[in-house]
Image (tube, rainbow, N blue to C red; front, side, top):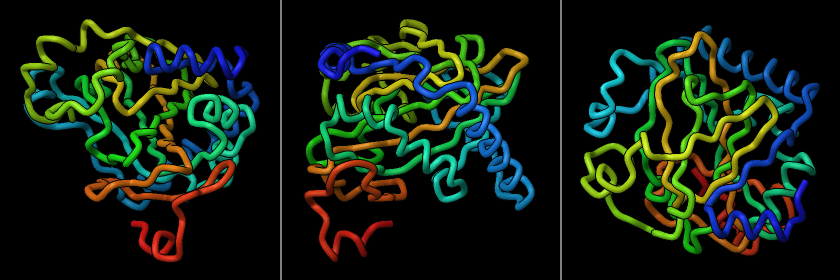
Length: 259
């Protein structure tokens, strides 16, 4: 694996970094077992609606009838997934990007069904869970392979340098995004099981539909520096779980006030 200095330099320049083979095949098998168990449990409890994106930006992709299985907080279900978030190799890359203090904001499970997995328009993530110092990054853990045909993530390298750009949440139509950052023009990040894609919440990204005969399985973790805090307007559950180091903003009120 490259040095922490090289990982940081690549990330700062491009707004993303792919850690190849971060989890071993044996580790991925255990994670996939619990991934499938989470999906099965939600189906059994009738808590598995189609959570694909909607809005004008989605409609312009003309993907037709699509579906997506999506649920939050995999570490609430599974010790194996909590252990994965605390894995030294995983946190080693996160530390190269964020520094020694790493806090988990939330996790999300995505399963794109074969042949009709929902697309995601190009967008930035920052407006959904803005943080004061803008240190928030995503880490996409690939449980299955992900090819462009399967609807892998696509990114615009260097787009994180835009910072906070209004109207980039991927729901409403944005002329700026449509003209400058169409989904077709983004770089496909194909991956194998065990690969992890890290990217800034400013990095413009999206994905095409899954038109392949295979399921695409990923878990996304949102992480930020322990010196950062979430602003008002956060639209996701906030775990506030310190994975490495220290939270420099924690207080009794902070710990009791998380959603």
